[in-house]
Image 1 (tube, helix red, strand yellow):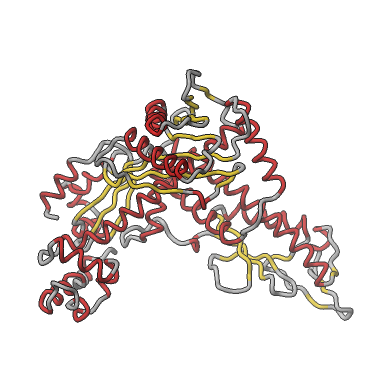
Image 2 (cartoon, rainbow, N blue to C red):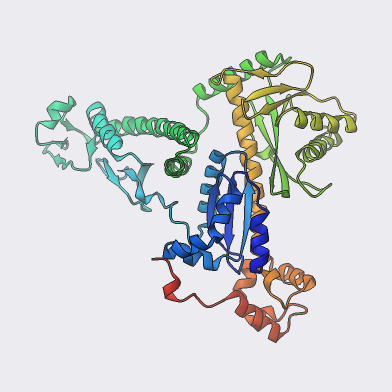
Length: 495
């Protein structure tokens, strides 16, 4: 893309929150950023004053920008979260804020040791130990471990237990044992019971801290403290990933009870005939009117049933029309269920207000189907919009039924954004061929069909490229050189 084309693209950006993706001449993502106003933020990169006063790293980035894409979102906090996800997924060269978990403290417990100790570390190794965290607040974590030592009688990293002649262990050789109030002489089996109790406690603390981090991140975003919110977002992502990897277990009875309470509360407040055991929620996602997609997520008994999730690409039009998109995907979903003679869900939730609900009702009318219970959830005030004549409903923010609807809606939104990002990523990778003058549409299609992806084309030798129909040895050599440009001079690298 030429410089004038890039400037025109910048001028056409919307004055809305979102995420921007800077690309080099090969279509590689080199920087991902968030913005309250995409137009103002992205434009600032191309002003003369910015180019003159920017740090060397920023100047190097600006020199490499050949194209850009933007993803519009509803709010700045949402832009914050999407920025982190895309940085983590693509690892752009010029993003340095979103670093690995190593910068935060972890609690390491080597369960293979005879007497496992609870030690602090910043490096996760592929060993027999179990890791908890990462935790961004080191002072709070150290106090918690000190509390756990007193409560459970465990060993921390500074302990040096000694074996005794009768096969037991003396945990401490000083007054600490008396202060902690636990027997100082124990068998390995007795100590193992302490470790199990302490790890269970630390599991609970991890989830408690995760909720605390989420709340602080949302508050920082609401207060427009976006640098602080970004730091907390990184912590949330890191801790979520650790908890996801650490434990994959069946739902506990108390979780089931909580789901049942939420379902009953939702039935009562919506005046449903039965529990909404099967709920489906739709969300529309698009990037500046392109790559319009939709998601549908399915909850069964209050929990996600990912086997029933569906993704839709909009087929009937091109552009930015959430109402038409909603009508299309709702119609496609329930036409298919009717054709397969499968039951409709107990409750359909639309991410949006009255316009989106009317669009969904039009789909049922066109299919000559009677819709099940149908509501919308308008995000600004978490208002429930009914498809019938009932007035809008606002529930207390801690209402279990509303909280269940929020989880359903947020999951649909996450799923739609992920699909949109996947399509955009695929298109970005393939668009590099558009910038090579020697390829027309037919040859580009032949290359993609032959190799399957732009990454495989880039990895192919000139001889392999020349085997594709329409690509001779000369063109293959030129394409290979285009896909493997020389590294920029060292002086242009960030300092």
